[in-house]
Image 1 (cartoon, rainbow over the protein chains, first blue to last red):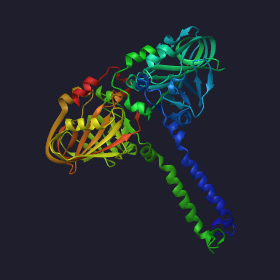
Image 2: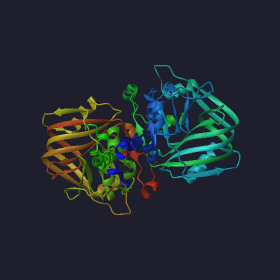
Image 3: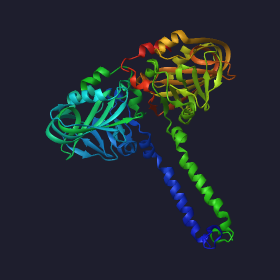
Image 4: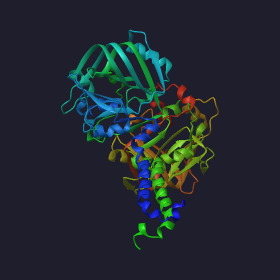
Length: 272
Length: 272
């Protein structure tokens, strides 16, 4: 009676067993999308910085389709409408009116740089008054110049200066021209939150921003944006190194038609 | 009797059914590695051209582990020992002694650029005497400057000039210095075979070779190498455009220590 295969009781259990095996296997087969991405430990980006610089302000990737690529990162939205911050799987938009809101899955991005964040090491900086530049110098000293790092800085800041762009209207100009007239600056004091972003090697120039590129989001969502400078009170810097990166090309027609030959490195430095 | 679930005959068939479902599902679950890569339609590369240029001549990716990333492409082997040609899933090495042999899965590569090749369009050039430069001009006119293309040229060539590097000995110099002394040139007449490679946009500079980069392999394996020039008899150019690309970083310690700051674009042009 214990040998089910020859038991008369067995046939009645068969549909359940077959369905169970099928469901278990289907689950395994369906896992890949985000789990495979997480396991690979690569950075993922949609479009390239040089296209954004050159005025390709629209993309075809919806926020809902960005989420399976990472749970942490930065970017912007179509029309350069605000700054994108992805944290713990949620995507926020810091608009030029200073408000931070969770973005809709149906919003689209023209450039986004994300990763599944998993800290490989954490460094604590408890001395107050450390500037963004000083923190960068400390980190550059400790880290490798040829490695792709996702950087997460949590803690309190005595001051924080950010920007957020307001949406552009077609026909689009270059990013530099647009920001020159349509970026709002924000100065915060004693804010607690998270800086989200990347430290990238020089060979990613043209595709992304070499060096540091961080966006800020306050715990209470009352502050955010692309970081220009800050002074810390006490912060923890979590560092996650990526084994590689993936770039998905922007399928927007403007991407195909833009001139990507010029080296926009010097121009990029001016607006970062 | 036709309703198997209640049939007495059923229990004897059960193990076979359960095992079949399990195997089918496992197959689906195991598919991702290369099939997911194929479906994604991205280019994949191991390491970057600037690291190779700077003397990072060893990598840690075995040919057996390169194969799930594509079935078509170019590259080199550790120590810059010859030219790598991947065609229809097989990896060949053109050595500096002029011999083309299938590479072992246990060989390693310091730089490889591959894709699962699937032609999106084919262009036929039947006029004889078309040079490599002329063919490039024709293609550049028809193709988009910002798109990543895998290019496969099959047919007969009245002449073909290639090179293959001989292996370097540590301590390594730069690629330019090594090739200056250790590349062999090969001139072939009336050879029939396949040119394998890529046409890449300018924003992939530093990571890869902007423009055309093709290796040759003769049908009879009696010719091959990195292509410098050719003249066609009649050829078919198959063009496969990629939706994006993935770069896996070289984990070799030399990669971490090399200076990747200089722009090696001008130097690269000299040796291509």
